[in-house]
Image 1 (cartoon, one colour):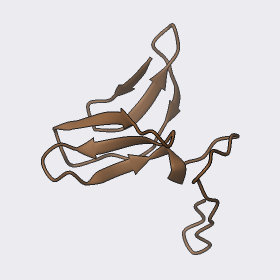
Image 2 (cartoon, helix red, strand yellow):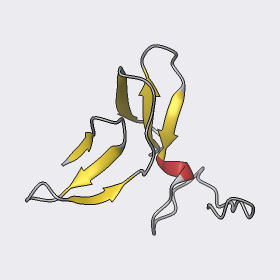
Image 3 (spheres, helix red, strand yellow):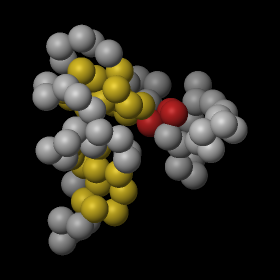
Image 4 (tube, one colour):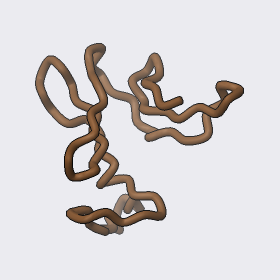
Length: 79
């Protein structure tokens, strides 16, 4: 089950409702939705500002999709 937690983090739950993956970020908006774009990018959008809060193309797993990119932020240690 893919859901949004009470603190705004995008999380994936298993059949026992245990968190098996999380975007690991908390957002300040209380009104947002997830949308799968035609490019294959899953985005979390703030309904008030229209701002993209999180996107799967910036948090890649083990699969590359067209139009996704690989980057590494050395100072912050983030990919």
